[in-house]
Amino acid sequence: AARLRTTLATGHMLRLLLALAPADALLLLAPRRLASRRAGLASMTLEISPPDGFVWGVNLDEGSPPPPSPPPSAALLFDCDGVLVETEELHRVAYNMAFEEFGLQIAGAPVVWSKEYYSFLANTVGGGKPKMRYHFTGLGAPQGARTHQDTAKVWPAPTARGGAVPADEAAGMALVDELQDFKTECYKQLVTKAGPRPGVLALMDSAIAAPGIAVGICSASTRGGFEKVVDAVVGQERLAKLDVVIAGDDVSRKKPHPEIYNVAAQRLRPSRARCVVV
Image (cartoon, rainbow, N blue to C red; front, side):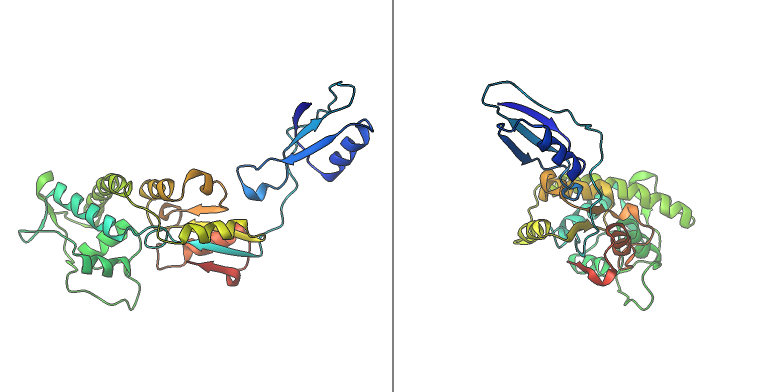
């Protein structure tokens, strides 16, 4: 038997192939899965075994694109932190590591986020930089959000980095940028020990296998830390089957604003009413 790898762009190509093959040849067609499950049947393995042993084949244009797939009728979107993996405590520890590294102090006391306070931040402000901005200025929370007595509302002194308190918000946000970069590196090291929450990958696999359902991940985390999590927990093979993966860097407004989910719905094309978020 000879094996010919070819691309079948349309059903017409397949009918032509069958018409040209010798009448007594044995044709075995086996679909080969592509990187994206939505690409459709665009590549096949063809085995032709004529009885006289002569190797016969037809070369088709491997550059022909597959036919467009219909849009999904529904979408299942997963958050990352607290859904795919329990990472809230890892984020808190990483922030405190960054605060300690920079020697952050307010009125002579070190800046430390407690478990209770970080839980409040995680449920009030989306994204790492917005959390720090909110903590140091009191700005950036959704209208009507509850407040917390531990919110500093004043810029800290980075005593291990010169000690100067930021003079304005521009200088304060420059400090936040540095803190976030260091925190991300700490988080990358911590998250390698994390595992998936029970049942979440089984649910994802069931949705991936279901026809007509698009599946994706939407996380408010920066891509640098987010990719480390999904690579370790979800795995490259499963990630390749997803229809959309969006990180906090990809949108201008962080959770709890729904922009990240609206962007996912626009890319996947089902109506927002047909999108379920876990």
